[in-house]
Amino acid sequence: MLLAVDIGNSNISIGLFDREGALRFLASLDTDRRKTANQICVDLMNLFQLYHDVSDSILCSVVPPLNFMTEKALTRLLGKPPMVVGPGVKTGLNIRLAVQTQMGADIVADAVAALESFTAPIITID
Image 1 (tube, rainbow, N blue to C red):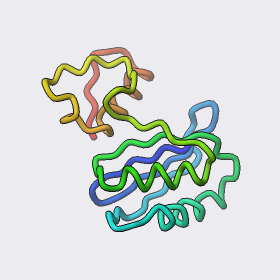
Image 2 (cartoon, rainbow, N blue to C red):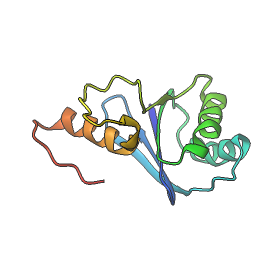
Image 3 (cartoon, rainbow, N blue to C red):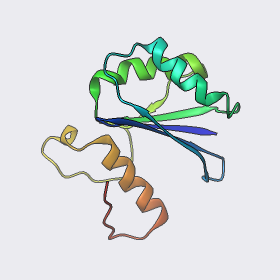
Image 4 (cartoon, one colour):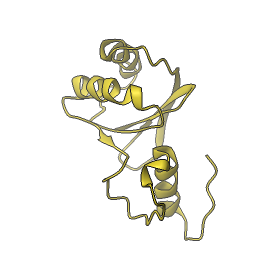
C-alpha cells in the first residue's frame, strides 16, 4: 500500500492507496509547523493502526518547514524515506517556468495524476 501525504498550509491530507490504485483511506490532520518528527510519528501511527500493510510513501508539500520532520517521521515508520515531489523528480511534465520551484508540489502531483487518467489537454483545479 502507498501512503500519500500532502502538506498544505492549513491541513495535511493523507491517503492510502492499494496496489490497484484504489483509494482505501482518506484522513486530514491540522498543519502545525511546530511539530517534531516524534509528534508526526504519533499522528501517523494512529492512522497506521487501521492499516498495517503500508509499504511505501510519497510526500508533496507547500509548507517547507514541515518537510524535514515529515520525511524523518515517515522514514522511521516505514524503514525507508518517502519519495518527495519536487525539483529533480522525473514526472514526465514539461514545466515551463523560469523558476520551477514556484510551482507547488501539490499542483505537480495533480497534473501527473490527471495525465495518468485522461488525455491532454486537461484542466486541473487544486
